[in-house]
Length: 287
Picture 1 (spheres, one colour):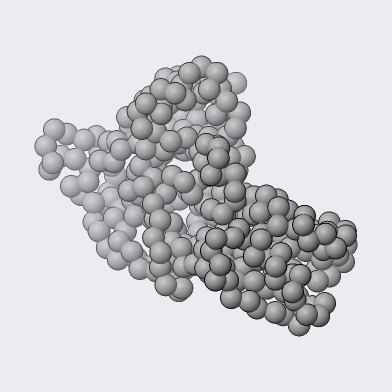
Picture 2 (tube, one colour; picture 1 turned 90 degrees about the horizontal axis):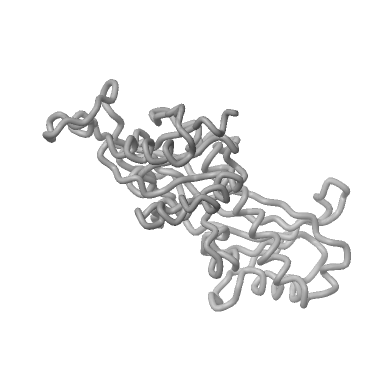
């Protein structure tokens, strides 16, 4: 049997709401608790430490559930270096048109520790701190590398983006690439980096200088160590949120026949200006 409960108490965390549903549910079947929120954003530690997911770089929009229509503005022909008049800028040749994208479900599954359901005092924190963080990892993976159903291509694989293979060291390469991002009329407002590169930025002081320039750096293991992703993320993309999500207890669906927790949140990605995005590899990353 599948139970479905409506969540109305927004003052509680998803883990607290789900724990209440588990302890009051009748029967030993599956339990599905729907949420009208974007669950990856509900991971509690995002509120207290500055580790930004890829989602943080994007603007967001609440949408109805279903395929979403947006404005897509690809360049016409090869991009050229910007001149000193509007007519000689690349964006003067952009050709806006309407496009449509489907929505897709992010899903993370975590085995239920044996005996956990007999300790309702432990359940909220396990869901909030261990299940939701897995869903955030799935979101980073999906936004960068795409989804299996093709609904999201992935920012690292997106047609129309640019690539620079720089002979410079990390700081010189980032400086040059950030300026190159702005040749298409945007502002370089974000970078996605692997944690190893992020902490090298911290060591050299580059991270602080980027922050002074208004650039937010997201770190995630879902990008290769020798690659950076730079761009005007807020102008180029919109994360579409239909507020369709759930946390479920699935009975007997684990690889060993045990129970699993399933967290799911529906999203879409509108790609407006892929040319505002650039992947970067640099000298020290290829040694």
